[in-house]
Image (cartoon, helix red, strand yellow):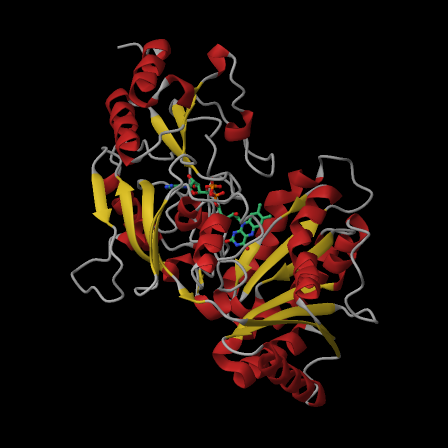
Amino acid sequence: MSFDSQSWLARARALIGDAHVLSSDRGDDLSAYTRDWRNKFEGPALAVLRPANTEEVQAIVRLAAATGVAIVPQGGNTGLCGASVPGSTGPRAVVLQLGRLNRILDIDVENNTATVEAGCVLQTLQQQAAAVGRLFPLSLGAEGSCQIGGNIATNAGGVQVLRYGNTRDLVLGLEVVLPDGERLDLLRGLRKDNTGYDLKQLFIGAEGTLGIITAATVKLFAAPDARVVAFAGVASVAQAVQLLGAMRQRLGERFTAFELISGEAIALVRHYFPDTPAPLQGDWPWYVLMEAADGGDDAVLREAMQTALMACMEDGQLEDVALAGNVAQGQALWMLRENITHAQQMDGSNIKHDVSLPISRIPAFVAAMLPQLAQAFPGARPIVYGHLGDGNLHFNVSAPAAIEPGSWQLQTDAVNQVIHDAVAALHGSISAEHGIGQLKRHELPLYKSAIELDVMRRVKQALDPVGLMNPGKVL
Ligand SMILES: Cc1cc2nc3c(=O)[nH]c(=O)nc-3n(C[C@H](O)[C@H](O)[C@H](O)COP(=O)(O)OP(=O)(O)OC[C@H]3O[C@@H](n4cnc5c(N)ncnc54)[C@H](O)[C@@H]3O)c2cc1C
């Protein structure tokens, strides 16, 4: 039977309302939904659908399943792997934009949990938790626009994984609409629940390929009263790793963030954001941004941080250090870190890598990689930074200065191979936190075992036998 897009759109409009079905045939501009954040991936969509609640999501999924239309779930569209937009080939698809499911359903202060709809913007959840003296610790550069559903679907990491874990560690319960339109209610706020398979884990990090997350119950924590930020210069990655171990030993649970930043990354930020002050007097090849947080008095934590840092200096674990004097100075130091992605985008073409390794192997990896890249790709500019405390490096390689615009991306596979082969040899991962999406789909078979891929395919087949849930992503 031939597909009649007009009658499909009319059915969708009858289900969720005329205003919430955007389609180009009536002049709506879909590009904000069909093109990804990096302008790297774009694919056609029959429509962009914005349901208001779980029932409307179910109705749309049932319509799509009955008519063979693929669904691309989308949150804030800030993902960096092309997973949130349609592929350029594959079955006819719609984008299911979750932004209208944005209510905070419940904050249970005694249980230390929040139950939120999937389209709630991360920052809104952080703010609502803070308003009742609680912390939702997931924190990342895109927090003003990414949504909790997208965070869960990508198992987002961010800057406080060291203390609180990845999104996977923060989720207690989920509500999911399955590819056949059934609602799977796992929305429990339990910290202990040993009743068989932990099904929610299947959907965390699945990049929307197994179902649509419509709500979640997440953990909250006591909001720290005191927070101290420090910025250190180190001579090498090996010294940074020593510093990490020493600071963890000295501050324990109070140590919440440890970000490694190369001198080149800092220079890039200061070039594109010229008002950025120099964080330290001298220049160092590597820097470390650290944060500690705790209940109680600011001065007590500051004293503990200062004592720990001075001891590290005496022990040769850092070269120079500055402690933020107040909240504004702390935020300014964090902006140095957050602006790296933006500065790189302004700087032009770069080939991104989001790898993880056992922390102990990172110095050897970086030491081997820099000369290897210089030899293989003369003039290429590695911009290295990342959540060193989690063994996660963003090992991005910017185009050589004198290269034809557009031609650097043609080297992507070759650069990836050099870096990802080295990561695999050290038993690391080619995707620490951003996911696979379309970007690394072709690389997955190179670095995962056949049996691991086979089990993943069997799970996909069991839940989405027709393959209409975010096709062309991950597998
Ligand atoms: C400046 C910047 C900084 C970033 N920093 C970090 C960082 O530190 N750590 C990190 O981990 N990531 C980071 N990211 C990547 C990105 O922001 C996160 O991965 C974020 O979690 C994606 O959320 P989103 O709502 O934008 O999801 P989208 O981009 O819309 O979607 C991402 C994936 O999730 C799926 N999805 C979205 N919503 C749902 C749903 N309700 N149900 C099922 N599937 C769904 C999509 O289909 C897609 O596969 C950063 C991105 C930017 C732009």
